[in-house]
Image (cartoon, rainbow, N blue to C red):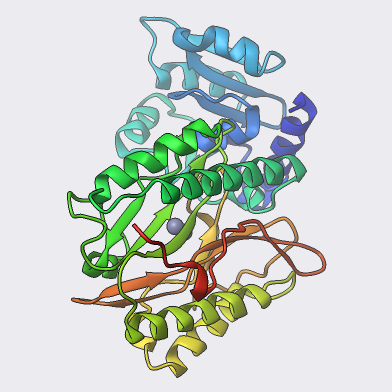
Length: 367
Ligand code: ZN
Ligand code: ZN
């Protein structure tokens, strides 16, 4: 990606300074640093003011910085220097009197350290200053997320084709990661949820040594981490045993909620209104109290990012946002069903990025 692209992103952050009454921002969130510079390493901050952007890092990353963002001004910390010392030097030089700090990523310890050295600068906690911009994905970001979806889907199809009845949830999780890596992913975008039968009623179940053929069906919630850092996040059900009428009923209801909510996605619509499409369908089906989470979330460098797609989220969808739509019904002691797709909001409406079939007739496999 070109240096100008990052400069433009930083300019969008700087334009928000006035509204927050600050003249600088210390970016401590790793993903935000990466989004604004192209640098993909850790433990590094970006100090941004109207005059300059400086990446603060240490000698482990010197070469990586030269490769990833050669045009960016950099301060490399020496072995005797600490981060707050380096920040204070730069802040004092740039005469920043009101410095915004990212309240969701800066630790109390780091804040105390900064306060002790920055006597003449007011530190102002802010949130979402960079996340606001990350909401809208550009063409390159969209194509990377699409690739992450393809990696996840190819991994899933290969895993599914090689399933055997004696596999455990943990083995399936391992297989899934293995296959996604074979198709180019750098790993999981989060620890996959492989939950058989009753365990699928836990929306965030951890894989166990339980057999996947143990209860007749399983829920798989997984995603790929693209080498660029962009993520995908999907959920599908796999039916391995005898089909019960209850499972079919619950599945068809969740599927309807998923499909209708997707059809409601378009620029100009509030997230809560998309949520309500799915929620009403599940409520009318008699399972309203069993859909305890929001309908979805934004997807990008983080697997969970803005916008939140829930009953109280008034965010208006805009072209370039990528969100998940993942209604679910969870019945403790029996199991749960969730179906999750990744959706790009477009000018005309939406584009479903995920393509694994989800019709009731496609979920059953023989193992
Ligand atoms: Zn998911
Ligand atoms: Zn999700």
